Amino acid sequence: MIIAIGSDHGGFALKEILKEYLMSMGYEYKDFGTHDESSVDYPDIADSLCKSVASKDADLGILICGTGIGMNMCANKHKGIRAAQCSDTFSAKMTRQHNDANVLTLGGRVIGPELAKEIVREFLVNEFQGGRHASRVEKMMNIER
Ligand code: RB5
Figure 1 (cartoon, rainbow, N blue to C red):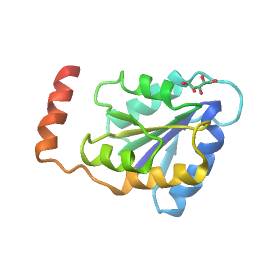
Figure 2 (cartoon, rainbow, N blue to C red):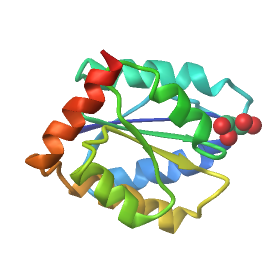
Figure 3 (cartoon, rainbow, N blue to C red):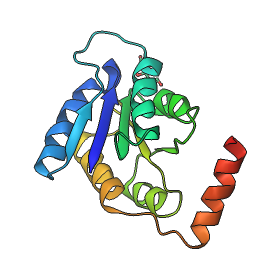
C-alpha cells in the first residue's frame, strides 16, 4: 500500500513525524512536500496529492495544514476524493469503514503527534465495509457527477 503524504508549513513538523511512523509500520509513502517551514499555499500541495490518489498512483492520502480545514476543503473539490478531517480516532476508523474516505486531513496546530499517530493508524488499518454503506457512498459520488 502506498500512502501519499503532504503538508503546508503549518503541518510540516507533523508530516515529518508521521513519515517516520509510516515507515515504522511498514508503509511505503510518497512525500508531496512541503520540504521546510517556509510559507507555501496549501491548495498547491492538496492539488498534486489528490491527483495522485484519484488516479490510484497512491492508495490513500494524508494532508496536514495548521487546522486541516483548508486542506480538507481543497481535497474535497477533486473528483474521486473523499477527504475526512479527523481529530479523534473513532472518526478516523468510521470514515474508512462507512464513508470509504481516501484522504485524511489533520491539523498540525490542533492535535499532538501521539494522537496524530493513533488517528493515522486507525485510518490505515480499517477497511471500507461495503454493504449498505456502498450505496450511500455511491449516492455521494452521484452528487459529484
Ligand atoms: C497557514 O497559516 C494556515 O492558514 C494553513 O496551514 C491552514 O490552517 C489552512 O486551513
